[in-house]
Length: 114
Ligand code: HEC
Image 1: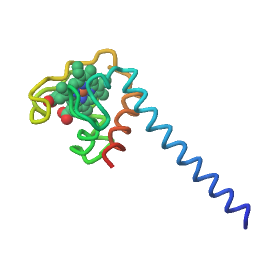
Image 2: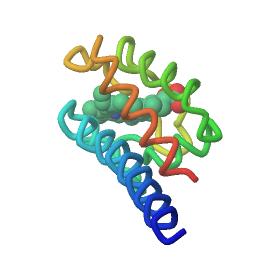
Image 3: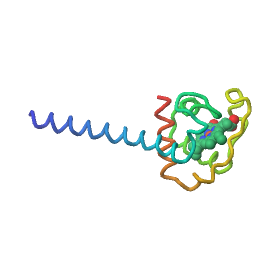
């Protein structure tokens, strides 16, 4: 019985460790790809905070990945004028095609808004 409890808590700890690692992975990826120069986790910089972005898309990771990919490829403007005063996001060619990192970023954005 005691062994089972230990096994379960070890499993839980491992599970938590993984999700924390994923969140950290998204943050690190956003730093590596230069996103954090314009996006704070919870504060507006040049662009909206990633938390605000996550809220707008209801933490929907699939939708967020689409939006992230779109903005990385083509840039974006007009969607956050109320927050940014109309500053556009330029395309981010250094991040294009980095699907794994972009997925991690989308996951991080979703988690920030929960
Ligand atoms: C030079 C500054 C800058 C950089 C660098 C930047 N962004 Fe942005 N980002 C913005 C601005 C400004 C907006 C708001 C654009 C708008 O009003 O539609 C924005 C909007 C977004 C949105 C919301 C799009 C929408 O339509 O709701 C996402 C997602 C996003 N950025 C992700 C990223 C990611 C991921 C990176 C890194 C690969 C990145 N940004 C790098 C300035 C930047």
